[in-house]
Image (cartoon, rainbow, N blue to C red; front, side):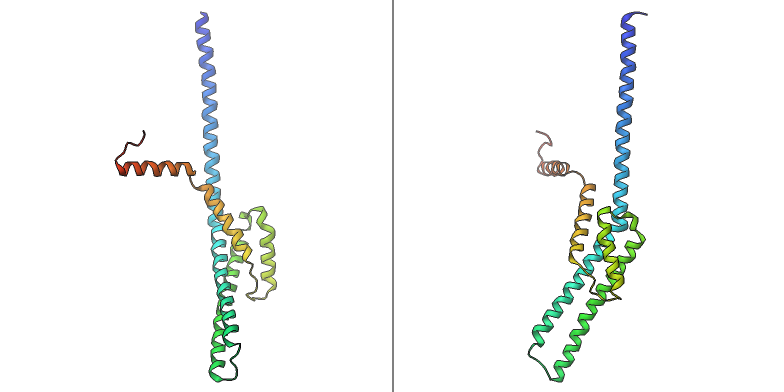
Length: 190
């Protein structure tokens, strides 16, 4: 067999091996990215989306309860003894209690989501949420079990998972540039 043919065959075999390896690595990377994307979507759907929403709702109820309480203190500080004020006081207390009950309901819903999806939690959230469940269990239905830091913590976690799933900013910037040029009638590439 001529030398040039041996060289050609060995180069072809080497190129085929290198090409097959590159294709395998590329497909393996795609599969890994697809698995990570599916995992993040399920993570957000099962835990971080619902818990963030419920913490936000509980926080709104808590903030409203505090506003009603502060308004109560300011409004009724100098008013006593009149029957009309007494009725108003009971109405304000009823509103405040309604917000507290909403907050307690949201906390119970958070607990149900966490119990059903505990395995989906990030390891760094387990200690804090274990404390949350312990406080909730020991509060005997009282709406006092709420910490605003959990709202921000879960908001940041959800946002980071959403950011990981979103396309890189450079592609969005290029897409916007091409759309603007297309609308202006300019060539896409200069």
